[in-house]
Length: 177
Image 1 (cartoon, helix red, strand yellow):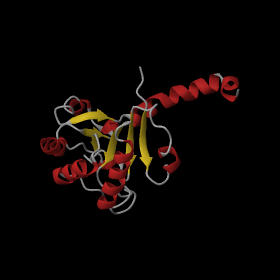
Image 2 (cartoon, one colour):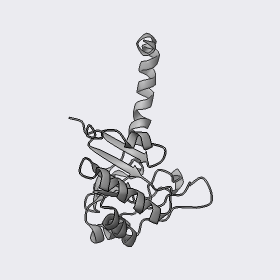
Image 3 (cartoon, rainbow, N blue to C red):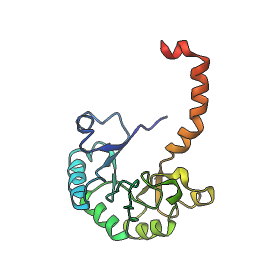
Image 4 (cartoon, rainbow, N blue to C red):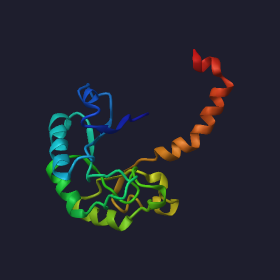
C-alpha cells in the first residue's frame, strides 16, 4: 500500500498542477513559504477552501528565506503556528524546528522544545521536514513532541543513489529503452 504525497507544491510555479484532479493523491504540502506570513496565510487559506475536502493538506507555516545568504529563518513560534492553523484550516503544519530544507547542514539541529510548545498550543499536527538530519535518539521522541509525520527524503536519496547508479551502469540497454 502506498500513499502518494505531493511535496512542496508551489502556489505559483506549480499552478498547473494545482488545477489537476488531486483525488489520486493522499496528501499535498502546499508551500507558500517564500512570501510574507500574511500572504502565505491568504494563499493557503484559499487553497484549503478549494481542496480541503478532497485531500489532506499540510502547509508551510513560516516565511523561509534562502539560507545561502546572511539571513536565517527563525524557528516557528507557538503563536505563529496557532494563528496559521486557525486562519488557514490546514490539517498539518510544516513548522521550522531547525531542520528545514533550506538550512545549511552545519546549522541543522532539531528543537524538540519548540515542537512541544507548538503541540501544547495546536495539538499534534506537526510535520517535520529534514528529519534525515535528526539523530536516532531524537527520532524516537518525535511523536511525543507533537510530530505526526516526517520527511526523510535526503536519507533515502543519499543511501539509494549509489545502488541506483550501479544498476544503471549494469543495465544500460534497459535504461535507454
